[in-house]
Length: 331
Image (cartoon, rainbow, N blue to C red; front, side, top):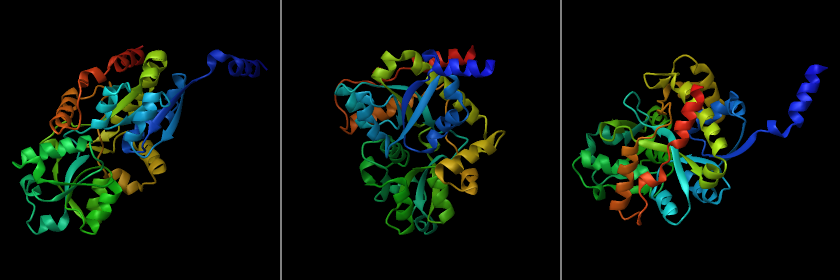
């Protein structure tokens, strides 16, 4: 009877209601820690009711984040992000979400298999004149291609850019409509397994610690619900740490990996074999992004005339939430 009364009081008392947080996801592998925090109850432990909203791309998060319709989002840096902030759509970069690292082939320059086997492509210099795929205009992978061009001793303009989603890139490799791509997992491993493309080089060779994905907060969430924003990130950082503890030699293979693999298989309709074979991204256990990479991409956007105005990367990045979340987890 006492247990029943206590449960009824907890349900009735408004102080115990969880804070709703609207979270935009794109169902990429970067969302795995979000799913972990949700399924393992770590959001709930922080008093958070994380409501996940799937969107087609990170670019589609900008407007709802600016309007306060989304509290949290995530995706790559882009010219559109900085242009939005310039127009007064206030969005904050608050934490790391996906970074490349030397232990993993998470992001690679992929080349169509026949071009490598024939000797047409042997190095980055041979990308000159080829069709290289990019998922969308104005995004950070263009900066990676620029670094690849510099490493190969050719000009950025020497490479023909074509815009295709990652699944479309796999099909284009197979029908020989595409020459190369800067591609992430699991699509890189899928292309290798299909026999349509090979890894020419890991992007770590010419662009180390590329900051692929970032965590965004809306201005309303950051200012009007500061405590909730810190607690949300504390739960997510707990998931970051648990996820990284499963990584061995760049793959999800260490202690606790079975549970993570199971989550990936369920959430992404992926086979066990692919989930275990693919390489993993890195996430910083304290949520700190690579500012040097963010600046490099921003400078590329400026040099290409993709962004204008006075918005600097440092004015968009706010690490105070990650720092507060680390302190909260240490208690």
